[in-house]
Image 1 (spheres, rainbow, N blue to C red):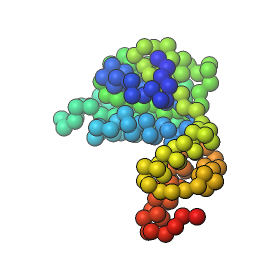
Image 2: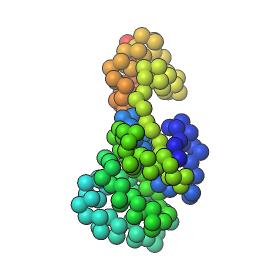
Image 3: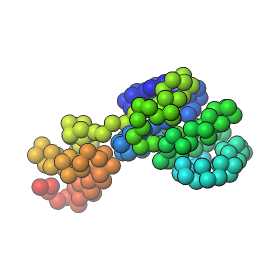
Image 4: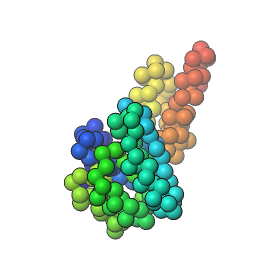
Length: 187
């Protein structure tokens, strides 16, 4: 099932616990991942390569239950179609843990993408690069929430230096916030 990145609050993790995130917008992926796993303490992260090289170790780790936590999160980074067979095995075991699969761009012909788009139990979220307008709006909202005054020309300058990368933008905004705490005037 395909869900847009702005509709992620509609995801019911208890029903749809396996999520594929693909696309180039890593900043938005991190933001949404953090929102989805907000109250979970047990988080494991794997690279696709290490799962493919030793699938038995991966399955042992996800099938083992903790006595201290109810649910754990498994994040698979840099996924591609190579991991499809392992995902199908996970679907057969009906794991209750949250599994987030992070991939770069996937073609429309991708078998992994096709599986997630067609199955109602699985969630597929495409992430497209941010444009200047979106980043400008994020910057304005951030600055107004921190009560920092800045001209639109300077906002446009900051946004253009980030080259469409939301992570770089937030790094720059954090620098501006820290500088403004010193009481110096922003130019």
